Length: 106
Image 1 (cartoon, rainbow, N blue to C red):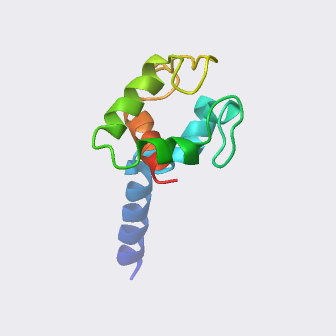
Image 2 (cartoon, rainbow, N blue to C red):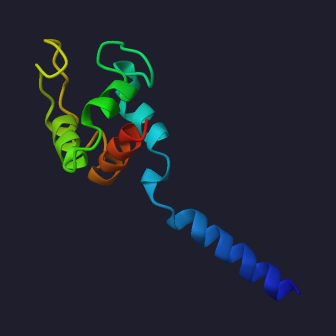
């Protein structure tokens, strides 16, 4: 019985440790500072995530396009206030892609 409990406990710890960092895109976005300029449902400095999702709805290349825009920054799409670039040191490629996928589901 103790052996089973030990095995189950070890397996549970192993699963917890092996979960990908992008398992919680919203938390990673908060850590990266995305919510300083964006909210889910209303314009702040930048557009709301719901507005972004609506604008790119149905576009097959939306994830790639928004990932690139988020990584490199830019201006003119949502107004003249520029979006600063988000380097890998701020948010990893995998976490950024997961964040964009999360935004597009809003």
